[in-house]
Length: 364
Length: 122
Image (cartoon, rainbow over all chains, first blue to last red; front, side, top):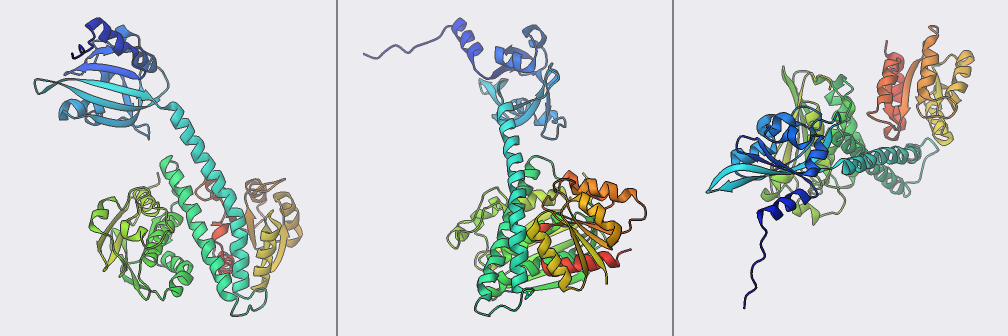
């Protein structure tokens, strides 16, 4: 004999709604609040009579990570009712309380007879997670800085050995010191990447605008990549075309971007490969293209190439060094500079990355 | 012979920079904090100062403030630090630093170029 299905009467359903441990709000198709549970009211600082019957999006402001107002049509609640599909977002809510509350919002349309008649929105206060994230960022910044101090010593002294400041070294010892230099450079890149990602994600990148010579930066990056390229007989050539490569921008950030692009092209080239860097200036911008005839990016990986921690399958099989952070960082930094990054690639034929930088970037 | 004052609290790094700049023919003097540096500039009168930011007794920014108070001090100041993209660098520029360089990227050749470029700059 089948058991009877357990049911709840409307009074019990009301209690269930009230007992939800996250903020829960129900609005009708016009966005007027029908129900708000205790957690929602206490998070937003309203009492029931102040919120019920009011338009939720008028009573509760939504702000993005930069604390700018979120466009009405982009609010999860509005998206859910207009598209008939659930919508999710990390935003800040500003209700009656003076402080902003970081929340993760999930808004689902209430569908009756195939039509959306309202929205149920659940939001979770993520202040604690945000504080932990902030601590994590501060830790990475401090750790990166502390790691750099001994690294500066290793780098300076190994170069001094290599370049004969302490007397000539035997040729059979030279590769060992070159390995130390290459490893130090890699460690330096890793630290820079960590530091910059932390800053990018916490919105604290400060642009330091000055006159930047793209040709000179490319030359510096190539110099740092010299040993790595030489060991695998990879040739790097640079061509300059069109107008002056001088722009007003942030030199160290551009160097970080170009170091990532050029080191990728060397890393993902086959032995004896060629890397061709072309710098082209016109009235409005300077474009740097970095072309290799290496392994290329498989078609299914192309859409994810700028995602955090993403590494294409053909590359994971080849070598294990790599964090999947480089292009994620490049994309973020290029955005900060008001530039554009794009690529074309064919498997086993090679990849070309194109970096377009405006002649003048306005400080953030 | 151009004169360079190295202000860096890490003894080994201070020593390395001295060796390199001596090699390129500069006259070099060293200090291990801002206070010592302020004392040394009086007799040594450097053309260039390589300045670390985080140092005990007196840090780089405080040194720069004191240094710029005296208009007879003409040396160009190159900041050598491991803090990139930080508010301290912005402040250093505002206080009149000539350039800021990340220490762990500096190579001997670069060090020579940085100093000679700074000497040539107006």
